Amino acid sequence: EQFASVPHSFVFHRGRVGRSLQQLILDVRRVMEPFTASTLQVRKKNSLKDFVAVAGPLGVTHFLVFTKSPTNVNFKLVRLPGGPTLTFKVTQYSLIKDVVSSLRRHRMHEQQFTHHPLLVLNNFGLQQMHVKLMATMFQNMFPTINVHKGCVNLNAIKRCLLISYNADTQLLDLRHYSLKVVPVGVSKGLRKLLQEKFPNMSRLEDISELLAKDINLSESEAEQDGTHNILELPQAYAGRGNMKAQQSAVRLTEIGPRMTLQLVKVEEGLSQGNVLYHSFVLKTEEQLRTALARKEERLRLKAERRRRQEADVQRKKEQREAHKKQSLAGIKRKQQQGEDGDSGAEDPGMPEDQDPADQSDDDAEYYRQEVGEEPDEGES
Image (tube, rainbow, N blue to C red; front, side, top):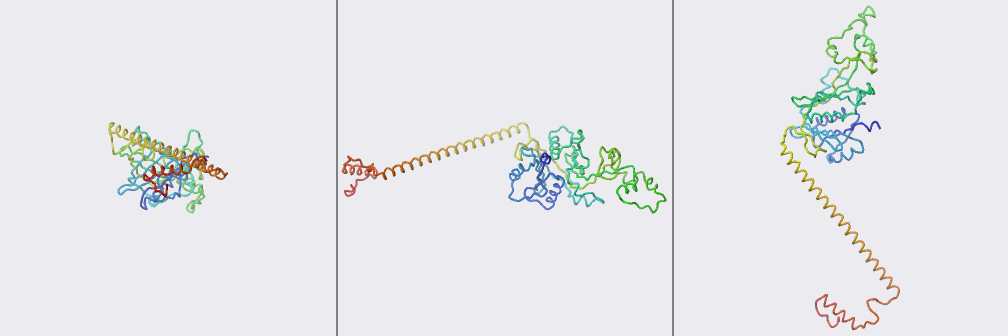
């Protein structure tokens, strides 16, 4: 029940994409783990309706769709089942392998992906409608965390996804980090002891030098640690020395991927509703009213066609029922006539008091009416 109550996602592409974009899709699936389809198979014949049909029983709430045009790479974020749809232009991106290869020391292991990342939104406090909508969409992509109830397990937070909005350039920067907590205020040698790494004490005269030496942080560590990332732990965190109510430093190591996005438009529904916002096309109120009137007219015509189709289907159904009843009645009459003939009764078409000459006159008159000619003497 807990697994089904959190948001789930599909990350896939539409149309033909290159090898780099396919790898980016796999990297984005790593970011969305564990509540995403990591091995989702996409075939050319699959349509968006196929994914929507499968998403319902699986509890999928979001689609992350990548497409490629001759000039751009586009990214659509869709909320199921009724929208909205946010369309972004991917101006820049870097793969996980590119980010990791640029680091001297990286921290990425499988245990980090057993829990969802911690989402951090920066500079989304603006009052524009599209900015608020983007913040809401990003927040609903991941399970909610209620820090006021104190039910957050710090050991479940191993990764961090930072989404920063630049109001001047109107660009979104996505960064994915690995999170590490280390104790502060101890020497490097003592930290090695806490990490079960026995230090080299060949140059020391006394064990106390190991504890007292280098009590301050080195220059490289001082550049990372400071008041901005040192805090008092409310819980014991994984790792030696990270005890409750002790000072520790939170360090972030980027593991990728990176993406720089530009919002293009916001639509109602699943990529087929009204355009609520467009960054390149600005319409006047008159144009909006005209577009709305055209859409209402299309909806009216569609409803009228549906009503006529339903009426035609009902009429044909009634005709089939009436024809079926007539056929059954005819079959019953034939069966009853056959039973009367088998009972030994005289031919009902030849009354007892009818003369054969009168019957011949009736046949001749019937022939004149049907054929329009006089019967031959032999036939009469």
